[in-house]
Image 1 (cartoon, rainbow, N blue to C red):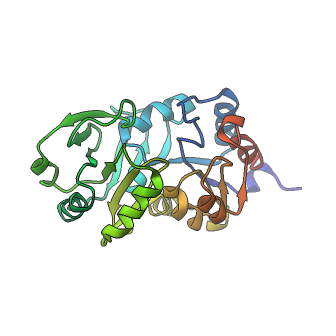
Image 2: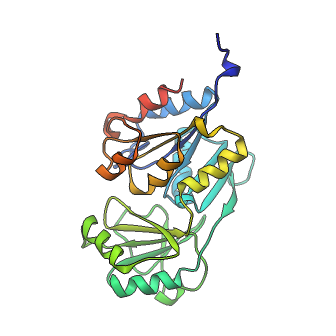
Image 3: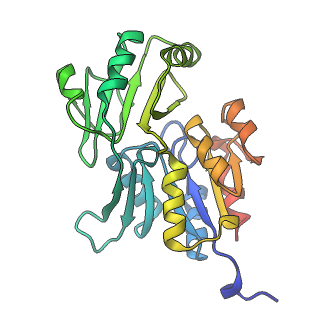
Length: 269
């Protein structure tokens, strides 16, 4: 009989929006309890999200995840969580790139798109206000030139008047090079440094804590989870994911509104 000490410890890369929380931002109690039970069993729950730091911290708090690690901004920022620290976390790694070339290119192809560049731990500098509630941190409207001035962890474009399909076609025509990008659930584009993704951040955490690659799990629902699915030994898509995301997963669980995350987490206990 295998003792608890001999059982493998899993590293679970866990998306937030549409996976852990509903699209309305609700964290349902069965999900919160399942996360706590998996953590209490000794497994490593690592939030891996496109959210900025300030948008991630409240979710970590609600989940009771005060220690360990988190991957924010689609892998550009890796945090170590520690309640003894003044802010409850420290940035272990921040990967930046020069936004000027890609923003100049995209301005030619999407001149009406809203632009945001991330100021980690603070908020976003934006070309104009985004639709209410879409950015998860404070917005500061600045002149266009200021968006190009300094290296950033992430650039976000939003075209409220376009469908996701139209926006994806536009981005493909623009021919982005030297960066990593993912189109979101709406006409929304996140751009990160080349080679940076949730997977790259999770792999750094995996190496630090010494989890075997065979004991990795990735759970998500959007295109920015595709690299995480390729990284994970067990990739799980939510039922609310787009078809291309489901096709990249090893298995599909229930809808976020039906607490689809819960049976996946409980299968690890």
